[in-house]
Length: 187
Ligand code: GAR
Image (cartoon, rainbow, N blue to C red; front, top):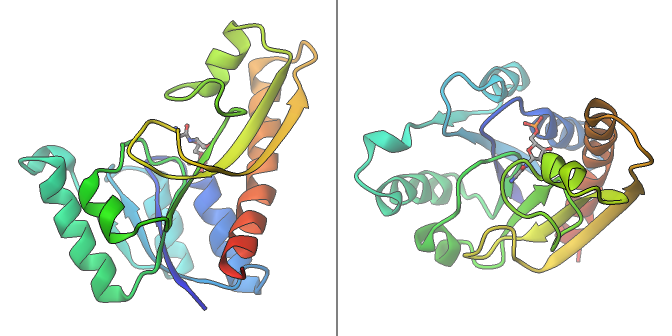
């Protein structure tokens, strides 16, 4: 089964859904590393709780993106990681990791891409008065949320509050991300 690393900057509920799915065998993969660019992120505690190795780094302590990505690349290749799974990782991936993991980096984004890429996609969706919200799983390329779409699910906003829309998005994500990865890894 493929070894995967999950990158996250925050709460890590998607990390949890993926790690849980791998543990019960619904996802045929081994989560060998959790990477976070924020030392205080709750995902770090979740990973420790799950017995998953963690790598926490602070980007500002490196001279450039290339420098910290070289560090990450060394760690990932050393562990035999085959896929990088971004789950609320709030940094663009640079050429070092993109070329080391060509077509093997995926991301989940809380909108129906190509609509509302970038930060606060849910806020953007609601401010625009969009009729539908959504979740997209896509390959990562050098752009901001521009890579090839793998799976997408939409639902009507129907005048719901931000909290309600956000809860629905998370519920979809926690089901869609492990299921999409499972399909991707078995093809
Ligand atoms: C998720 O909703 C994910 O789609 C979003 O961050 C959240 C992370 O939640 N990602 C982005 O906005 C990427 N631009 P989590 O930390 O609980 O998994």
